[in-house]
Length: 392
Image (tube, rainbow, N blue to C red; front, side):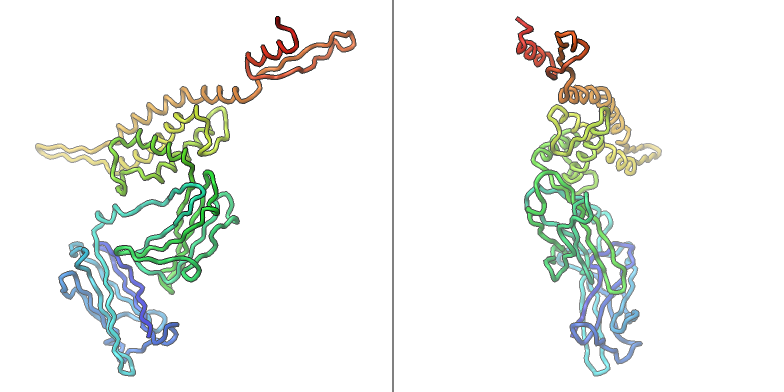
C-alpha cells in the first residue's frame, strides 16, 4: 500500500491552503484504492492546535484516480503553530474490499510578519577551491526535484548535470521544512573569483508544471572577504541582525563589490580589472563604489518602509531615505572628482610614456632616427643616457 502526501507544510494566515493526498495499493502508484462510497470517502477533518474541528468533508477527486485534494481558507485570526502544538488534517478512506486506511499529516500556520525573517538569500558565497554545499529549503516534499550548476560564462560548461534524489541529491528534515542539498567538490569550483548559476528544477505534484528556482554561487578570494568587512564597517555601524530585511548579508556585499568592479572599469579611462585582482591603490574607491551601490538598494527599501502619521497631539514620521540620499550624493561627488585622476595615473604608470632616439652621424643616414630605448619616467631616461655616455 502506498499513501503519499503532497501538501505544503507551512501556510500563512488568509492563505488558501490546498491539501493533496494519493491513495494507492502499490508502491509504484499504478493501482488506486477505490472508495466504497465516493459521496463519503475519502473523508477528511482539519483540527487546530487546540484539537478543535475547524473543517470536515469529502476530498475532491482529481484527474487521475486515487488522487484527491481539499481547499481550506485559513482565517486571519487562526491560532499560530509552535513546537508542541501543530495543526493537522486526518484522512480516512474505506475501499471496495472493506479495507479502512487512515492518514494524518501535520502542518503549521504562521503570521506573515514572522516568516518575513526567514532566509532570503538568492546569492551564496564560498572560497575558491573549497568544497561547497548548495541547498534549497522547501515547505513540502516535491514530486520531482533535480539540480544543475554551470559556470555563468558558459551554459555548456556544466559542473553538476541533472543530479536528482537517486543520483546524489540528499533530503534532510530541518525543523518544519525540508532541505535538499548537494556537495560540490572544491576541484570543480576552482581557484580565484568565479560565478556559477544554480538551477533547481522542481515539480510539486504530478499534475503541476515544472518550476525553475535560480540561485547564484560566487567563489571569492580572501582579499574579497577583507573588502566585505571594509564595506560592512562603512555602511553598517549599527550591525543590523542578519536575517532581517534591513541587514546586509555577506552575499549582498559580494554582489555590491562585483557591481562596483563594473562601475570602476566603466569610468574613464576604461579598464578591465577583475574582482579580487584590483590594484591596491584603487581599493578605497572600490569599497566606496560598493557601499554607494548598497546604499541605492537600502534607499529603495527605506522608501518603501517610510510612513508619516499625524494626530491631534502626536506626529510620527519614519523616513531614512533622505539621509541615505545625502550620504550617497557626497560619496558620488568624491568618486567623480578623484577616481578618473587615480585611474589615469595608474594607466600611465603601466605604459611607456616616452622614447629615447638618436640621429645617424653620417650624411647618408642623417634623415633617419633610430629608437634606442623606451621608459616610464625620468629615472629610466637618466639610466639610458648614462649607458651611452651622454651624461658625465
